[in-house]
Length: 430
Ligand code: HGY
Ligand code: MN
Ligand code: MN
Image (cartoon, rainbow, N blue to C red; front, side, top):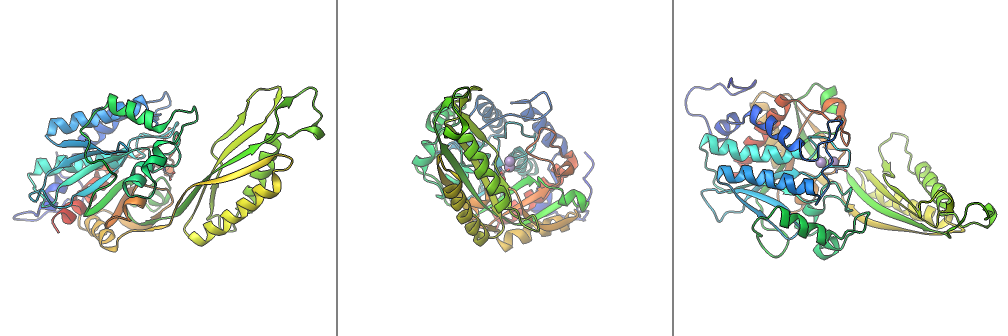
């Protein structure tokens, strides 16, 4: 296996992190992605592997089978986060964690989330192959329900782990068909059993680094291999519900109607206008609309829709939430409407020390790199509240993600993993 580009050519003993980074295998990492992509694979080459589905359970079992083959131990916690542990020389030391998520969007891609889990697993394998024993244990993690497309809000497993969302409240969340998360979780853990570690969320960590595709075009536009992620923009999620009266489409005059869809259109249109900004920085998305009873000849009596709003400034998010609430109050008549905030995550600033480790690793290994913020949300936004944390980005083709055509290259995935391994070893041996 020829050394990858940028491999450190030095005479004499290599350091642990150099040996471990060199032990990363591009072919093995790519094949694992292709194996995982079959689980929930779609005809257009993407994946539909939604949280706590049969496909999610299958991915959990596949990861655990690979872990067993390498002698790594596996655990789940109270919200189903899945951990793969490689012991350190100091078993009692707080572990270093790396990972992301295996659940996908309904029309998701093969790399969003999965790359971070497989890069972390490849890191454990590379340590094993290189015969490097870190001081601290290193654990790969697959966080439960990062996407939040089936069960809202997203980043749920890491949010419960970090104490940002209460376990009981999340266990009570229902999906769009009324399935309660507690039941879906029990079914998944029965289908993909692993020893439970702890009866309460979270445990002490000494550091966290997450690898992820950028999900935007900046790295590719800059012909740069590694994104040294400085932070994540803030986000808020809401549910709007509008209640009117169901009525006969043929006999009910429009002036006499309480048409929930008409009110929803007025509210949504006003929100779109109120959140447009000159530099196109505020992100405002209505991703799902449910119209009930959903019959062509019955006036809708109930409409609900989701709101996903993001911005680097908490003050801007706060000011726009006030606007959204005012619009709901003023545009609902003759229906009634409510807006509920499901989650609010402040902008994340990553640890300067971890940012430095990622940048130094990219530099040392000869990979082009640039500092950049993340527009997408990640589990790291919650874990950064617990310990020094950071992220490594690699390019994805044309920046496309949350789309079945999402793509990345084997060499970029391997480069990001080599940088990740170096950062993890340095953190684990501090
Ligand atoms: O929505 C997000 O930012 C993430 O990709 N789930
Ligand atoms: Mn993701
Ligand atoms: Mn995603």
